[in-house]
Length: 261
Image (cartoon, rainbow, N blue to C red):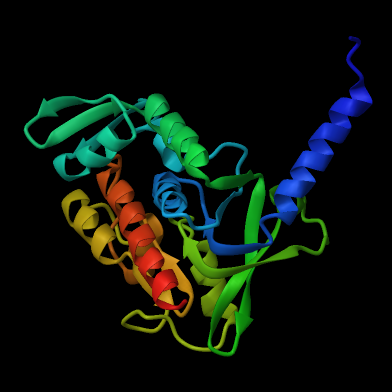
């Protein structure tokens, strides 16, 4: 059989268009494909929820690919080892309470297992705005990342979702939009984004989990977005809190979804 270039093109266009159309109404929309977003997407999909993740870059994974300063080995504390076990990611003990894993194996496994669980990832797509109603956030507004990078004036598309999770990391992209454009105040001490503080690994890992919560009706935060929103410090090249935050966010959102039925 001779391969036909037009058939190849049609297959891509038709199958992607179907995937996009099938994900215009969701239980959960996740902004950001770092470890917190991927883990949250995995647990949400495992719970039978319809969830899509939007990653502005070509590859999901966030800062985990580079480990610390491009040394592609990553550190986890003991409390996160159970998640590594669930994903079948290999790790070794460095000393008491510290475990290391290969960053490439870890993040590629998180991506693969999350997709196999039912998470749909749209890469090269940015969340540039939210859908709002008088009482809550009701979805996200998306566009190709290349449109933003090129500074083109191209209107976006809307995706309705029952809940939105900001896992965009340090920039807190969705929370920032809500603060600037949506009436009302955030669920923070000042009613606004408190801002990320300088590195304090131990405190940051604790606060990442504590700050994983609903910050505005319909909008949750996880991972570094949680600390940046509520004023916690950055944690540096340790990733256990990110994984635990993603799992906690998923658990909270599943409970919210099921209690609102």
